[in-house]
Length: 305
Length: 315
Image 1 (cartoon, rainbow over the protein chains, first blue to last red):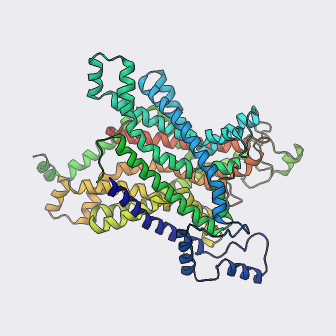
Image 2: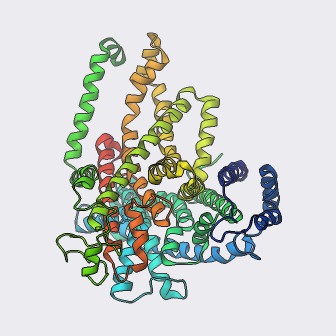
Image 3: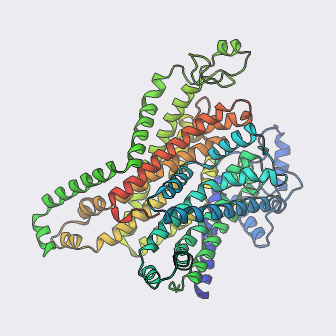
């Protein structure tokens, strides 16, 4: 088990290396730098800025410098905002993004799993059809369309919640629901399929035939076993909720890491782009690893070698 | 045994069986209500995309200043005027015509991206599965790396870095959208094809074909590809909504299709600042995106159940 985890973590290093090289190459493959947008700066000013940030050096050297910084956990200065470091900017935005992602994750689990269980217990009767209809609509509605509908109804219409900003619980409600919507549907679908699969198992029949009340069979035997495969999708879902929230952040004007990332790409803020891509790729890989390990812990039949 | 008779009768048996497979699948698909609804909506969307821009009441870029002036220079809401049934935007452009042009962009992106996916994904998956060993190892590590990229971020990165080049301007930016989305989406298909090839390579009919001296290229074309095709079709159909969504997302951030053309996503991005005053400018394209995603998802799910009944209800 330990060697499995160590190997997975070691494998992360070449992956992140290639990811960063591709990102770096893409950014430098085309003309245009962070200083030649918007206000037209004089040539000499741009030259001095390039010199200050080391952008006048050959590209391989710039890459080596960046990797050196990464090892010291120093992601460098922002090219767009004077006197701000990438560490500061990400440190400020990331907690909001993580908070949003975790709230959406909790909502998706709390709604999705019961919805799937209800659908399976009422198989081919109205609870099933209702829950399946909800999850089908959820799967087909992208987060920003859901965001539009939520804003139209609860912000423009009923005026219950603001449609922009990130200041206190009232502003958290709509973005969390918009982000979680799709994943509620995904979790509900998995839970339903897994419950139906478990229902046919021999040990359920055994439990029923030895006279166990339905409640005990459902709670102790069905749900516990049915949730094992659901755990495998939770990892990618959490990874997606944390790294995929930038559209929602952009839409609701939330100053999180996702919106920062989009803005930095638009403004060619190389240092932020590099940091964010590598950070996100690492986050996705690590969360997948955590789930695989957790899966082996929950389901003792699985052994990693 | 069975294998022997198959070899002797060869092609005729194979052909009749493959027709049967598709016919059976069509029968199962027809009984699936959601899939039929999805198929109907997909056909409708395709018709709108092909004929819509020609039949549209206006050209999507024409600004009807007279209509604006008659309405105190405010955009017309839907159903207020016969000449602009779905209203206009603040520039006086006809919303219905813009939506139809957007349908053309979305559907083109959706299908061309799948073409890119097939052109990259099938050969890579086939090579990895057929040759195995080191080739397999290298190609699969490549897919691991692409997989490690947060894909929407990679698409955005690719689009922004090439946005100001000739390549980015080609076809009003649509070409770049094809390539950016296609380059990140082929991994699933490559893995599917590899898996199919790995298992089919060991089957008796392939062994038999090899034994009677059929050259490898012919085995791949006649036996392996046709037998791998149904999961690929399902993956492609389910890849379409993903591509539509990716295009809309790009346009929403402002790095997709370039003006004067407007896709559904860029209509949302233009309208969402005024969502409280002119809700139809965001609501209508939003609903169309949702409809497109829903119909392709229903059709894709139906196809999966129809082509491989064993998988019914899974995933």
